[in-house]
Amino acid sequence: MAKATFAAGCFWGVEDVFSHAKGVISTTVGYTGGTKANPTYKEVCTDTTGHAEAVEVEFNPAEVSYPELLALFFKSHDPTTMNRQGPDIGTQYRSAIFYHDASQEAAAREAKAVLEGSGAFHRPIVTQIVPASAFYKAEEYHQKYLEKQGIRSCHTA
Image (tube, one colour):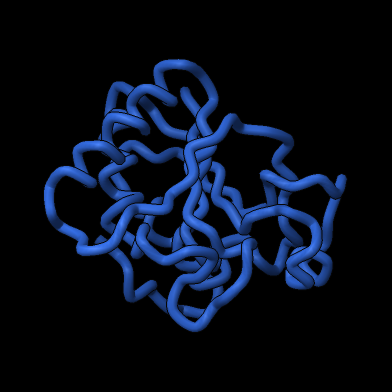
């Protein structure tokens, strides 16, 4: 099994997209990329912790490749909006790929460059590509939130 970590706005919809992807074993929503240890949702929402709402994806590389997950990531949100997705505004909603090793970093940089060169967007892609750091699991009520509510994300691919 392998691990991937993505931030693309509110983690509820991002988790829903990845949790239904072939080869994904599990998803966990949480906070990463900031400076506060063990932040709470309320603290992250203040936009002062530096953390992004993110999804940690455990996947089987024999069933889905990391580049395939990157394609799903870029397809599931607008990577040209700085620190926002839809009505959600703040650095906690930034677009970011948190790579776990050199091969993930290379694949992320290549995917971003290909997308930038494709002409699919009229604005620059602002997705950060940064090393994975401590990942703090969000409160239990956030885990599989849309599924618990009987809702499917509008971003489902």
